[in-house]
Length: 499
Ligand SMILES: Cc1cc2nc3c(=O)[nH]c(=O)nc-3n(C[C@H](O)[C@H](O)[C@H](O)COP(=O)(O)OP(=O)(O)OC[C@H]3O[C@@H](n4cnc5c(N)ncnc54)[C@H](O)[C@@H]3O)c2cc1C
Image (cartoon, rainbow, N blue to C red; front, side):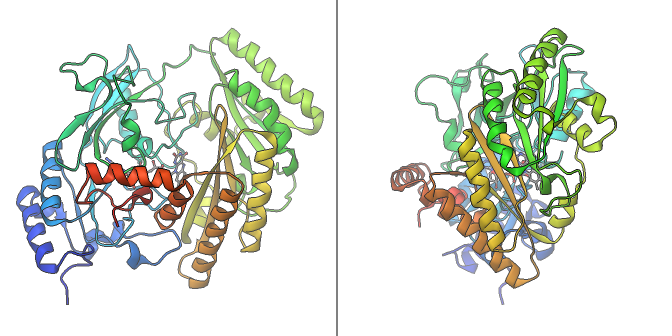
């Protein structure tokens, strides 16, 4: 019987033992774990596939860039693939499970220094393990008055993990990858690369000018497997002056109002009258996770905010409230802080849209506790008809497979991230099969309509990558072959591998 939980594909037990010995010489036994108990939290799978398909063989915890470079050297020598995570909290998309069995999880959570915060120009430079909570504490401790932009998951997710997954938050700096600036990456040959202006010795603009000179390469390291990101710069927002922030919620009674909501909303977003990524939550998302008309429950809840000087806020709010009153009259309910009083959901959204690290327990957490959870994440163009149509197609497929439509639409400048959550009991094989079939059909139907998927869990990465077209796949594989000839960095990530 093997002493390992599992082995990487094509690696014998003998070779793996030699590799582990070398890793341990480098990092020590405590930071190279192969036992079941240490691997347990990396084997927690919420998506609809068998555990065995995504079991890691070991987990390692480097503490410095030099150690990461040395790890990569050993990985090349023994062809032991490394699945890198910053914090491994990618719940809904695969958590920390590798795309294929036997990969060694390279957990960077111990590399957690806030290297620099520049208050004047509003940016920070971070190591991969820094969480939103830690960055928040750092700002508070050093009395730095800059806003974060946090995802709604939890304060304990990594800023870099979220950013290179192209995640989003809810302030005007919502698009995390867009607001990142300058990376340091360890490549598969063990060398270290600084992108943008970072290659210039003593660069003064690494964290302020994204583009550098020549081809812009940062994208190769987002949702990718061409390197291990060891540092990242990200911009932080200067808060508006006192009285310069006004959150609001507008409640719409009918599902089929979505198209009519999108029309004024996209104009308000593109003119930056509403500058933040606002959200439209469905009744089930906001309520207990089930569809159905409950008394007083809105079909859509729009959360947004206006920012600026108090005068700008007053003026912009008159445009926002005017646009929706004109369109809907007394069919809608408009809540500002005054009307919302102590409503905890309003308070939670208010905090989120000013980048405060807070997490509100919801009924959806109870559903998530059943073990099965996948987030289906298509993008919609912010056109009224398209958003409406996506909701109809999704609802019909979900119902067919016995699921409720539970969604949050995050409204960008021209796009809408249409997050749809599937919850199921993971201990029941028939529910796992149903969830798989449902997600699979959702992908097929959305692609058929020309609607791309912006993030996928590891069970569906190949399928979603295939849908991007043969040319994209070929180019990604060519780049991978050149940068990582031994296929040691997260093979299978975003459907990119070398067989
Ligand atoms: C209730 C709930 C709410 C959520 N809300 C949001 C939300 O509002 N916005 C949002 O964006 N997401 C959201 N998520 C999804 C997810 O929780 C977050 O995106 C989270 O930030 C990802 O976890 P992490 O930061 O620990 O990243 P990790 O799990 O560490 O990393 C994510 C992936 O990035 C890659 N990666 C990580 N580190 C590196 C590295 N150093 N080099 C190269 N590749 C690397 C790996 O492939 C890894 O799987 C939510 C999830 C839940 C359950």
